Amino acid sequence: MAIKDRKLDHINLSLKKNVEFKNKKTGLGDVNFGGVDLVYKTLPEIDKEKVKCGTKFMGKDFSAPIMVAAITGGVKKAKKINRDIATACEKVGIGMGLGSQRAMLEKPELVDTYKVRKYAPNIFLAGNIGVAQASSYSTLEIEHALETIEADALAVHVNAAHEAIQPEGTTDFSKGIKTISRLAKNLSYPIIVKEVGSGVSYEVAEKLAKTDIKAIDVGGAGGTSWTGIEYLRTKKKKHTFWDYGIPTAVSVLEVRKAFEGEIIATGGIRSGLDVVKACVLGADLCGVALPVLKAQHRGGTKAVEKYLENLIDEIKTGMFLLGAKRFSDLKKKKYVLLGTTKEWIEQRKFK
Ligand SMILES: Cc1cc2nc3c(=O)[nH]c(=O)nc-3n(C[C@H](O)[C@H](O)[C@H](O)COP(=O)(O)O)c2cc1C
Picture 1 (cartoon, rainbow, N blue to C red):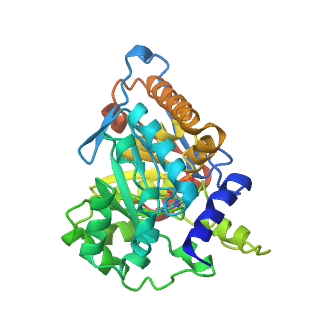
Picture 2: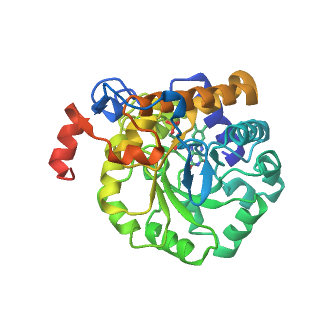
């Protein structure tokens, strides 16, 4: 199947079917953010109106610790989706990730579907390429692809679980760290290594910490399931790996122990409270994909803007209830782990 048809399938399935983790959905049960509690400050001793959740990520200003995670590019439909999302991100003052640039590397005429800079001149904008595909492109080709879309950074996505279930998947990950090291050393753009829904462990973060990458997006389990999307796409009846992976909350704790660079928590971020929890656990920024795609589908830029504004208001409420006046105050707040999340961390001896 051509990449553009597959990309369209991914968007349509995400909009029409339930593509999220079944057992690890945020807030349900004691896994992912449902397994993390914050200690409510009965007397916050601050004014909610004065709570400021702005931060800096890779040197760029964000009005809140969130970005829209990579979604699309390379199909006709992506042009409007990306334009609407970019316009909303500029208005709200947060960052955005573009979908995999493989399609434009293979077919340069598709570059238009990724070009959003004129709608969002000030935002942090991340380009995107899969590690399995990046190994076959030269550093110069990737540098040029980033220049063309006027990106600030490159997210190299690592998606072994997804590729393993995708019938046309590229499953040769034998040059993974080597490719990441090469790009991080030679590209003039900072690199984020990004999972897409199965999480990053302490051990892998430890290896990544030895390269020149600047950030890890843990892309943990709990939100969109990429194995799930492939099962639906291929109409498979048996869904063994639908819920496979390290939950986002756990993955933030694992990566924080091994990696001193910036951390993005993506995967099942569904409320401002999830954002606050992820940041207390050690994330510097959170990424949201599926709810933003759905908002764009519902009502274009305006709906995305409204969704993001509500999310930011919830972040401020969550901060207020902890007595955190500034984003940096979150790093000093305490958390409690429950159930499966607690068991996981105890067995891994990271806490
Ligand atoms: C339709 C769709 C397309 C996506 N395409 C990409 C992609 O090209 N590259 C990538 O790194 N992640 C991609 N993602 C993954 C998201 O960036 C994110 O990591 C994942 O969906 C988990 O976040 P969520 O639970 O908020 O959806 C895509 C997600 C969706 C829903």
